[in-house]
Length: 181
Image 1 (cartoon, rainbow, N blue to C red):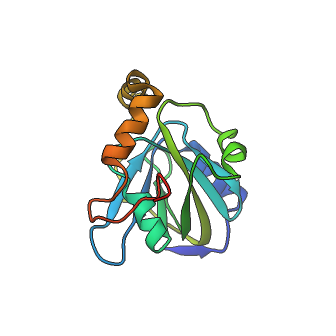
Image 2: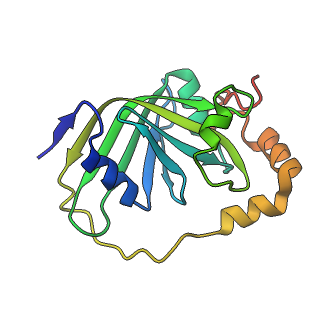
Image 3: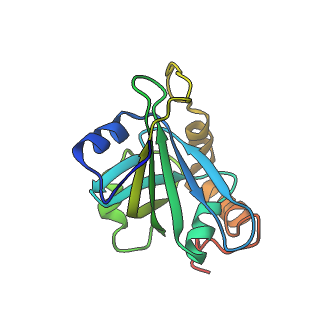
């Protein structure tokens, strides 16, 4: 049975910390919904009502564009081992860019991966748990390193050029704010 909470308690924070995978969903006012899996050591609970994750360079930048337009964001975690549970965090998100004042403070909480594009911060309005009894069990085998190797090979200059070419607008033509334009 679904249950709503006002904020993260210690039990839910522990559940989040144990997960190797989470999903991010955003949507523009009109256009395609974005739903992306995230991994690596890229997520931090900042407090009971705020969470942040590293946004590494990828083929698109949908989340940033959607957040600029309306701020709506949902994060979902589901237990793939142990007791079943699904946790959804609903709220308002924003992309923190490298030139913003809080960048250094947030970045200090994370490993230094190559290709860090921005840090996404979610201010939680509400959260919900549900049973997750239909979610299959999986065995964790480790992290993939292909994205990190790709970014490392490109180097800082190559990454910035890639951002300019591929990450300035969403697939629906919305600006991402990556270069403040």
